[in-house]
Image 1 (cartoon, rainbow, N blue to C red):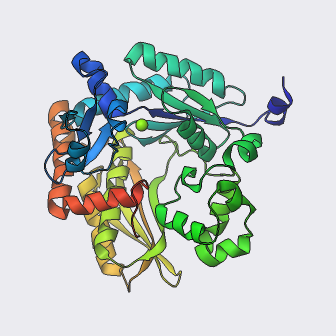
Image 2: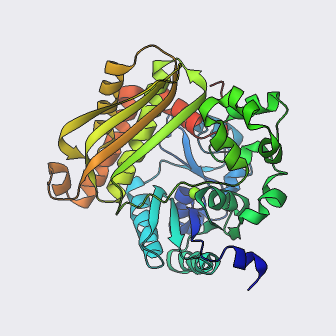
Length: 396
Ligand SMILES: [Mg+2]
């Protein structure tokens, strides 16, 4: 046993498993004629559509997710453009999570192609290699797996290992590996925060870790300690296991205060979609929906509504959230928007929706998403994507 292993003895490990270019990879797997070619999957191929995934061949042309489909067509006109088949991707996703379940019962579903897995001390790397091989052999897909002792470092390890590899990042490697790198590598640090830090002379993670906490507090208020800790590789968030969860929540803090209600709605749409997805993947429905709002003066409120019947519908969660927001929005701007679902029910109450055959149910899910976009606008959804997924620059 090495010194390094001795120091970590008894500390449970965490894997972040992230499928590579998931939607595009499923298409390339199922259609051999697409292999080795640029493939772009967009939710809608209309003028307002946005790229959801593209193959690595398309990335070479500069195509990225969350980019308008129109722009992708300009960059790579020869790409194969596909509208995507959510029903199929959900089926494959279920197979992948079932495969993970053979290795550990501790699974936190992050999204359709991403999950954190909890493992006993010392087992992370070995299990990661077995999962990597099993996904390749049984499902003909490639997965990148980051291994560490907390969610933050596991996520960063996967970013560094992409694509199709297993990589570890241990706390004792943070100074050597993480500190020389640019701030953009820190998950959750948006372009607005990066710009703010750049302006005060901080551009690497090491400079952030070395900055006086008091200075950071001046610019980032209450979120400063968490920011400072993440630069040191510290993260105490537990895994949110669906089997044990009493509630599920999404929260977003804004470095620049938000004044536009339209953007708040866009954030709520994105949060409702994510919560709806997490509920459905755990076979759960929620009776209670609550929102959390922090105003410019840092006062914070939460307001809850109990639904007539439990739900796992994105649209119903979103509409309840908006009713709560409209009733309690107070005076703009807002610093934080949170959405939470609780009061879980599992299966005891069969809705008409559940009685539908699987295929119709998928159609119904797709319809909900389309409805959200139609009702509240593709542009709004696109703005939410940009806010929540940092790469393209935005002005906050
Ligand atoms: Mg992925």
